Structure formats: structure tokens, C-alpha cells
Image (cartoon, rainbow, N blue to C red; front, side, top):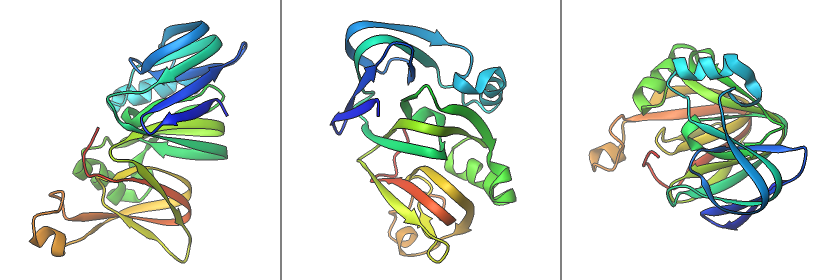
Length: 216
């Protein structure tokens, strides 16, 4: 695993010769060793079509390619950081939440309307997220950012999970999502996020939820 959590808001990444990492531009805090940082215009492992897809969706978070031999410390904006390890599965995450990820992972873009039909598209409009989301697939580690820390909640076919759309960070596994109305006591007392919706995730996998309704 290339990432080690130094504290809740900083990670340490080991960079080895012949390997590479991708990070959000401006996320490098310090480094030691012979490490190079170059702007990435190829859209990560997803290639040029992945980059075009994200630009069309306004999801083109600038990336840096990190290579060489040494140690790099990453953090951004004082946000809490969660390291997620993938073992051949796919992580669905908003591009602006990506802090750094393993260069072995294949990056792509998925149209939310293809997951949940029309409700997937509605979710994008209601939550302020784009109609597209970033995917990372393969074996490797991903560091994502959130407000107030993150919990991982398992999803099983017998037990779907309902999440406030503003608290949603990412999910992985064979998961379907749909939006449902959630009028209730939160809206009555003014603690709701203004949309009165819940994001329902069902299937097999896990969802990552932040301890805040604040967007990055």
C-alpha cells in the first residue's frame, strides 16, 4: 500500500522507481528524496477519452503525476482524509474529492443516469454534483477528502442504506442508487440540507459517508 495515514488530515506516500502516483494539484505538502511532479493532461490511466468525458461534465480536477524515489506528504485544505483500498473492484467518487491515488488504477467517467435511470440524473442536479462521476478500478489505494471524517457503511441485498446526498462521499461494489423524497422531522426543524431527498443505495458493497453536509 503506497499510503500511510500520518493523522486525520495528512497522508504519507511512498514513491518507488518505475511506479507512479496521481495527486490533485496543490496537494503536496512536503517531500524527501528524488521525486518529480508533472502536470497530467492524459486523464490518468483512463487516457484522453476519460479526460474529455470529465471536461464535458466539468469534472476535470487538475492532476499531477508523481514519480521517482522518495516520500511525499499530501493534504489539502485541512480536509479529513480516508484511504480506501481496492482489490479489483470499482470506486465511484466525485473528482474534487480525490486527493491521491495509485497509478495502477484505471480512471474513467460514468454517466450517473446509467445508474438509477432518470433518478440518477435528478440526483446530479439536486445535490450540486455533476451528471458524471469519476471511477477508479483495479488493485491499489485511493485517498479521498471529506469534512469531519468518514465512516464506511456496508451495503447488503437485504439491507439497503439511505444517505443524505450532501453527506455522500463515494461507494464501491455492485451497488444501485436512486433518489427518494425524505420529508420528515429534519425539514420541520430546519436541519435539512434544503432538498428533502435521500440517496438509497442497494446491492452489495459499501458507501463512505462524511460527518457533515458541507461540500468541498
